[in-house]
Image (cartoon, rainbow, N blue to C red; front, top):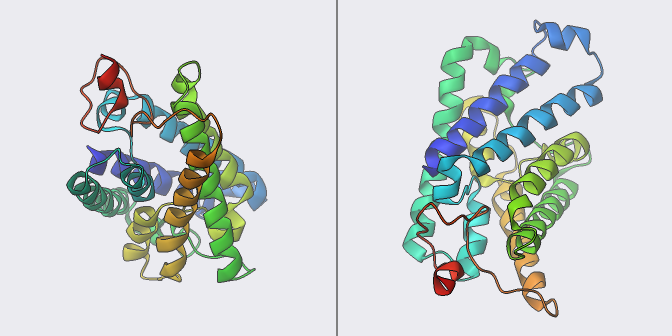
Length: 249
């Protein structure tokens, strides 16, 4: 299920990157300003993330579209080691399959230099700034997820907030690092683009940022304990995690 989720996310990313960036696209010709084109890209990916979180699949699997999220919940004791490993492998497989499927559907358009298989690369400020930016946005996303998902009155808004942050990050942060925040997402595009960015940025910054957010959350006075690894927990779908909601049942 995690493979399918990230695969669908990558199909969406590739499709909208082609629509907005390929020189032959009518949208690209109509909107010359790249800053303006990031707005529909952000909206598209934010809405895609929200749809996946609240889908029946997302409610069942936890909607971990990102191995850094899985790693963080493992560190918090909510995901078993073997589950975290298989989630990570599924996420990588999903990213590779999603870009591959998009490449078949879009033919040569996805590989155009203006699209580059929706690859994430550091901006002109260099790898160091890109690393700091990736860590910062990952920190912000994870802190919001933990803050909302563990409060009964706010938990149902977790997916909406996460999707809104994805959209905002794409609009504002993408020129700095490409807005990956996801090791599998970067590897999926890079494998087809053939242009490998400094991978240490995208393999280390997102998990470090999210782990730092988890450490801060646990240190906050009166912060509710972490209940579950699902981004949206309901009483209908079975939970495979070390779930605090089970203890209340």
